[in-house]
Length: 325
Image 1 (cartoon, rainbow, N blue to C red):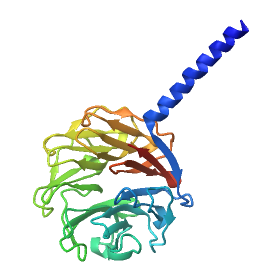
Image 2 (image 1 turned 30 degrees about the horizontal axis):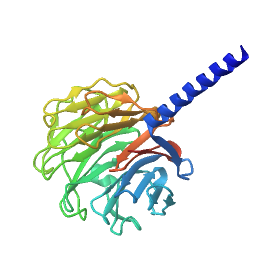
Image 3 (image 1 turned 30 degrees about the vertical axis):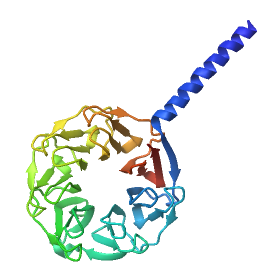
């Protein structure tokens, strides 16, 4: 009896061990942290497999030159929380903090304040910039909101036609917060924001029209593969999908009720979403269905970036998750 009991125990141990191994293989996520002093990370960007940046609250900025094996904190002279990082080339990149646009022209080694929106530009309301994208080296857009105290006063939508040297504030077809912008080519771009807002341009951002999203929840992120296929994510596990450039948006069943904050498709079929409470979702059929992944954390994940080789998710308290494809 003792021998049989021992045999059963060994068999159970083997089964559980294999199950644990499968769980790890399925998730593929490993956890690291940067010494952020407890600050949350709001943005991540990789120029290539080795060179990347993470940024967050209190102007925290850190970079890697070895594919995330080590991270070096950078004193960029930024006081406000950094909401977005974006590079238009190997050397030229931008960071958004408060109402300011910071620029680097030496691959992120140094940063300078290139432009600052001030309350007097917006009838005394305080500006906050959330997202910036370019469709080349010259033409780009920045979106955000203005507030009076804790109350949102208006949206911000501004365009540059000279590589960020000057910016012109445009009239957006909504007064609600505009949170994220994605650009697919020289003519077309989309913006999402509060109240289910989805804006679209077909004339290189000179004019914008509002599309019907079919929801009133806040949408935090949008990603388009081309002029037709796009996805948007937001509050209460909301996932929207379009196959016709946003003329119609379809709500997709989500396995998570968490607020979803970032979406990226790396091919026509493979897509990823991250969000609050450590939520990570994956699709292998173009976003028609989604499966929840084991992230190994309950901390909020605020941003996601996938390179050809690795995926990176960043979040609360300096958290960095890496996925090896």
